[in-house]
Amino acid sequence: MRYCILDNTPKHLYSLYMEISGLQEKISILSGAAKYDASCATSGSSGFTGKKKFGASVPSGVCHSWTEDGRCVSLLKVLYSNVCKYDCAYCVNRSSADIKRSSFTVKELVELTGEFYRRNYIEGLFLSSGIFSDPDIVMEKLIETARSLRTDSGFGGYIHLKIIPGTGEKLIKEAGLWADRLSANIELPTDKSLQCLAPQKSGKTILGAMNDFSGISREMEETQRKIRFLPNGKTRAQFFAPAGQSTQLIVGATEEDDRQIINLSSSLYNKFSLKRVYYSAFIHPGSYVRRENRYDPRLPESAGPPLVREHRLYQADWLLRFYHFSAGEILSEEEPFLDAHIDPKTAWALKNLDFFPVEVNRADYETLLRIPGIGAKTARRIIETRRSRSLNLENLQRLGGILKRARYFLTAGGSYIERPDDPARIRRMLSDTDGAGLQLPLFEF
Image 1 (cartoon, rainbow, N blue to C red):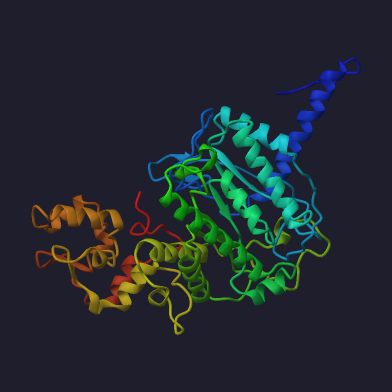
Image 2: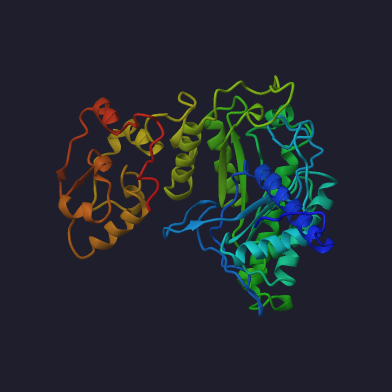
């Protein structure tokens, strides 16, 4: 919409123009400042229910990506404020950065979210913030926004709030009453690296927030098991952050190898029951911030973000969460980095050829998951189908198996497609020429 402001324009129209222009600038600044945070997803929530509501939570999927049922999901992803008193070397919003600063009000965010949803621009809200004041004060603003959306506007869509480091347990609990998911970004793999690049942050504080969330979640689950309905009419599914918690790790800003990152992720999943660990390829602040001293000596001088490495870490993470691999099986002290040319599952198979071939008519579910080209859905279909008939190579492909990869690692009724007698040749056949191709065995659509 365009406005032409003339000398004789009525005051109320001029005020409206100024209000819209100011809000548009805020959206531009604060959405741009939020785009480097990867840890937002809409999966695992049944939504916030109530007598009067509009909007619906998304059952699965991630921001600006594809859900399992093929839909593209989008969130309004903004910061409450990009004013920050911390000076983290890797962050575009650090206090020393020469950038435009802005902040929303709670009323602006509530109205913006509602209007964007009604126009079908978004299906939910991802809200974080710079640390412009005491952590509890900042967290209270995020909570107030979510609470107003739920109670005043009746918004029933997805809400993801960022836990501000240093926030107290009481506020974390309240945030979980209004949000579908919470996340506390651990940022860097070791406390040593965090102290080097973000000395005002503490790994102990961030892990403490994750631990507080886990404790509250377990407490609520126990309460839900004991009683059918919770206070104030809230049902079990809506009481405390039903989509769980997530975190983000920056990859490539420090010298840790992939083994350290995967070991940390495995530990976080086991200890805090995280839903997701997100990996964000390091982008040097000099590439998007104008400063006289663009390059901080603490940061690596990188030609570009390590996207291939990020991609492989996501594949290894998939093995941890859905394929029942342990961190020690994926990487070792002798080989601490993931292979850039083949996916982690295929790399494991080539190192363990004595495990193969697997006979698909007899193997259990866990064993089937180890075959490159056989995903979780295909493994379940194999087990279901062979209850009524034996599988052969012809009908195996109909079940969804990616035989381009699986052909070297299985038999059906004792028959090979191709014997794994030349590991070097298999590696050549299954390698990605550019190191960044999607690995279908890990991501079934």
